[in-house]
Image 1 (spheres, one colour):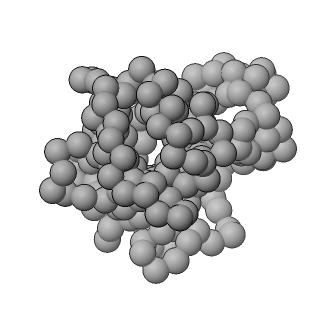
Image 2 (tube, rainbow, N blue to C red):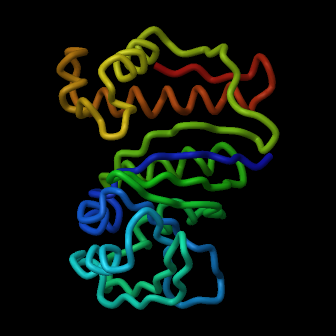
Length: 219
């Protein structure tokens, strides 16, 4: 069964961080198109000049061209410097047959919806993001018909980590606490907290997508 996941990724670890910093009121939404050689972005919340200046200030952007201007939004064609750009989102997510459904960014964060062939493909994508130094927050998982239920099989350590993250504003935009600071609060290492989050996310996915009695509980 396919899996749909919503993730939040820092722009500083993915793409267009400088553009977002220079236009904090803007929202940048990736336009879905399979026929274009490079991506286009719909920009809302700012005037044309501010949006253009934001793109021009971003060192990952080689060239930008305004394609469409309406009363409420702007469509830009963006060519990135080789090795930069939207591939930082594509590569980790799409290797195992993943499909990027939506991607939009505001306030220094990317929000991504992606479909994966199964749970294992989602977990593998999360691991690839982590290997590349991208801090991925798994916000929601569904099988296409519903969201996660309220009951979970989290271990006490996993629940403690998630509750502390919620209490200290780790999931807020912008974050009120870094992962390093949260690890200090819990008196564990940064790596241990990252692994605890990863396994907690895996547990939540297991509960949603596997039949009752087949959940895998990991610490």
